[in-house]
Length: 315
Ligand code: CA
Image 1 (tube, rainbow, N blue to C red):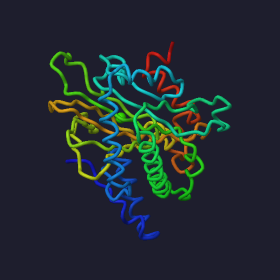
Image 2: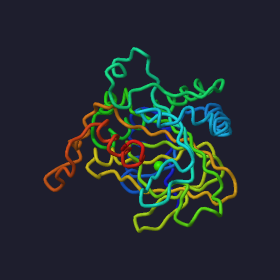
Image 3: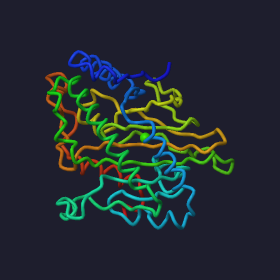
Image 4: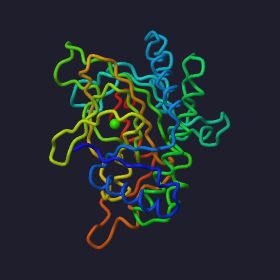
């Protein structure tokens, strides 16, 4: 039993196709919270370019990478060194390194000038083409996330454009990830990515052919999410689970790279706008299903979750 596969091709076939995709997406979001996505419209050449840029970045000397360290940013942007993050603070830090970028903002962006949380400049390494490639990919996958949110709205019985104005200045993060082969010196408690759930609305993951991602079933067992050429692996995050009053599920997952090869993946975390009200959707509550969470905002929720993950943010 693998992950369900969702084909987005019918989306271009008018309302009937949209309804078909929305129903299939809704079933996956309610049952497993994970699905493989095909015919997603993000060009393969753009994916290839991001993977190539990622390999070039992580191959830089560590001092060069540290020049753009995430500790230099209050906005969750930059380089996270090997063992710099604990997705499960009760375990050893994760055996991975990462590079985060957020939405590119003009220097006179009102939210940036106002000092709003997560509205800051990206930190770019000195690599030709890297910035353009990543921002092009960011925009392409955000466009895909808008289409997914329209299908989600249809499934939830909301107007198709319900989320449009709530995710048009997203606190999204594009994250390059590098997992070295799991070395024998690591003790058994250390993962590439410890079991965790994601924080945002939707995660769109591209992985190379190495594998290592596993998803927890409802019964507690783990199933592999093997690479599927040309497809993304998508999952629901905690913010959308909260927004839907637990109608959609955010499912634990983990990474262990036992292959002896380097694993590279590219994650896009679609969080809503910072000022988006995250409160129980009207179609996700009723007399027998009261709202389970108090209202919050996109920014407050993300800050709470990131502060728990990074020691440096709490100091
Ligand atoms: Ca994750």
